Amino acid sequence: MDGILETLAPDVELISPISGRMVFRGKDDIRVLTTAVYGSLSGLRWREEVGDGPVRVLIGDAELGPLTLGDAMVLELAEDGRIRRIGPHLRPRLSVTLMALKLGPKLGRHPGIVRRALQRP
Image (cartoon, rainbow, N blue to C red; front, side, top):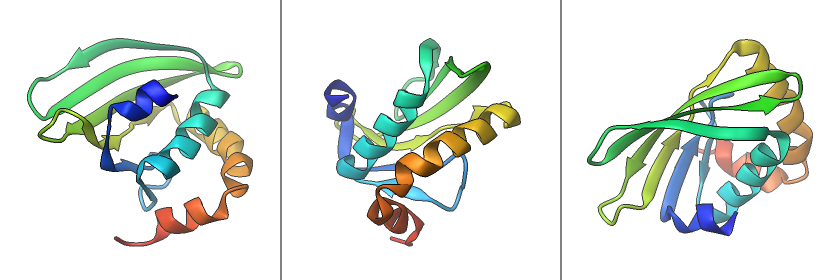
């Protein structure tokens, strides 16, 4: 997880693909979120990277229980090349619903993170 966090800008934001209203901000909150997300997945494979310059798209998939979860993740890069904004786009809907059900209890243990994600900057 630390390797992933080193690629993030200090003011990184992750827009929730489950609730577009929630925006997770900062490395500490995103560490908890990504630990919950990646702890729910197996067989994660990033198959393709598209783009150059400040916007990139990673295309991949993973297993979520008996389902496959696809992701087209939009990354906006800061001037120093670190990731400034993350916009996951997940599919299919059934897999996204299962992900929400798995993440709910894990994030529920961190109500401060959920509260901050729901606040406007």
